[in-house]
Image (tube, rainbow, N blue to C red; front, top):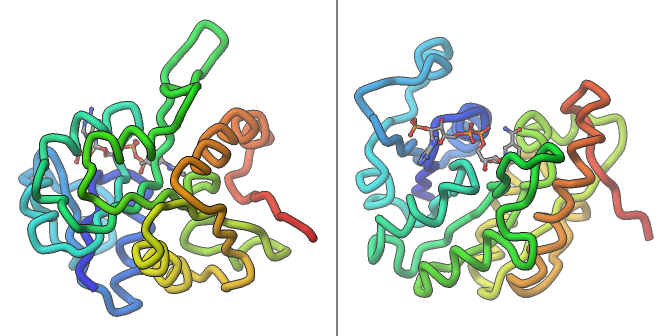
Length: 210
Ligand SMILES: NC(=O)c1ccc[n+]([C@@H]2O[C@H](COP(=O)([O-])OP(=O)(O)OC[C@H]3O[C@@H](n4cnc5c(N)ncnc54)[C@H](OP(=O)(O)O)[C@@H]3O)[C@@H](O)[C@H]2O)c1
């Protein structure tokens, strides 16, 4: 599958090599593709770097790994290029506040905002509730844990679930919450995750036991 990852941060750094090993063609989208991020040169990565437009043009799946508060504006610039494509939204939309960090969309979700801005893209929310290190290596945790998926398009959700499997998530860990509105739950979990990550390790996750 041809995958564009927008953003050259930690999420792209861990996800791109793993998806490549799984057999996918991965292009990273950057605002400045002339400027290779340090992790790319350090890893000797053969993952390609392009502009956002260039990365998306060849992709069937576009991963939103941008700062969440900037994502709607940045992805709106891509307009029709995203029509029909699966947009896997892993971002957390947060802003600094007097109390620390606040949600950008406290009465909704980034995923719904992306759907509103890009009505012909097939937005699926996934993986925003774990650190990048857990995203690509859930087996490093001492027990099975849960990962959530929300979206309106069943086929798009299947694509995302298969990518989660490629990243190491067992089928029984993947919880399909339903339509895209359910992304509010995982997005608002950010306020629980902040104090948990303050324990000092990114190697943690929630498990739904039933
Ligand atoms: N890191 C984690 O452990 C983790 C876990 C779960 C979810 N997330 C979410 O995943 C997303 C990516 O996180 P991250 O830690 O990989 O990276 P990040 O620090 O949020 O930045 C990602 C990349 O986005 C680009 N960028 C920065 N500001 C931008 C702007 N105003 N407009 C457009 N592009 C901009 C930059 O790449 P270029 O300069 O190359 O354009 C940057 O490297 C975030 O929304 C984050 O909340 C992260």
